[in-house]
Amino acid sequence: MEVLQDELLKKFGEHIKELRLKSGLTQDDVVLNSSKITKATVSDIENGKRNFAFTTLIDLARGLNLPPKDLLNFKIDQKS
Image (tube, rainbow, N blue to C red; front, side, top):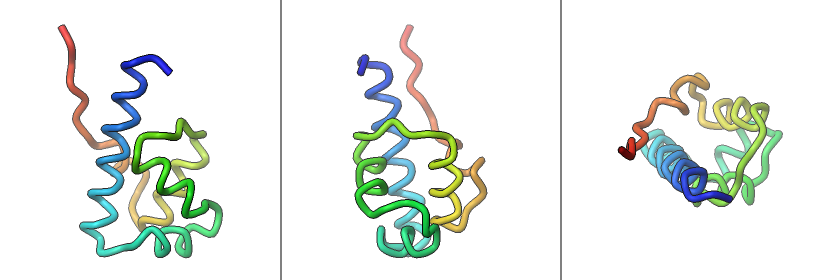
């Protein structure tokens, strides 16, 4: 993966973990709420190790009990 993509996945993962913790959910809770993703997938996403399909984003939102738009509401550092 290129550096920019790595940074983006890491930032996204940090955002997802923050949303999950603010909601008081464990990774297991997310899996139970979604029923279509695994704990390993949640962990990989939170750690910026997985580039995933759009359908996984929808499943992750379902698992977090949030609208998908909330998952995409995070800042990306712009490089000049």
